[in-house]
Image 1 (cartoon, rainbow, N blue to C red):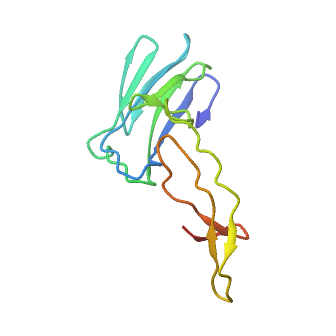
Image 2 (cartoon, helix red, strand yellow):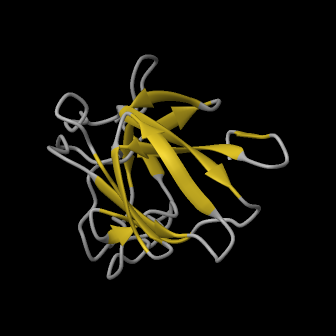
Length: 146
């Protein structure tokens, strides 16, 4: 809920693309408990079947570049919270996609070939069922290499 005024509320969903390729379209589905309902929406096409809602992108906001986000909102009534949220068929609760396990931790780094201006770092690679994209090397909390 973005805002609540007792007898109603303004709801908002945000789709953030954390992947490496653009989304060409998006569909969000969720359920509200009995007594809670969504009404008019903006920046999405909203349909309802019982307590199940489906929001689809409009022609101008379907493409979401990597790292970008798009939001839509709606007016609602009742005090319930959404459940069963799905983005393009997968869980949209910020958790992992079904079948996507967290990667293992990489091994402890070792430094070699140390000079005044460089160092060679090496470690045992992490493993993951979807593969490891890259590692970020931090110095004092700031990224210095990828």
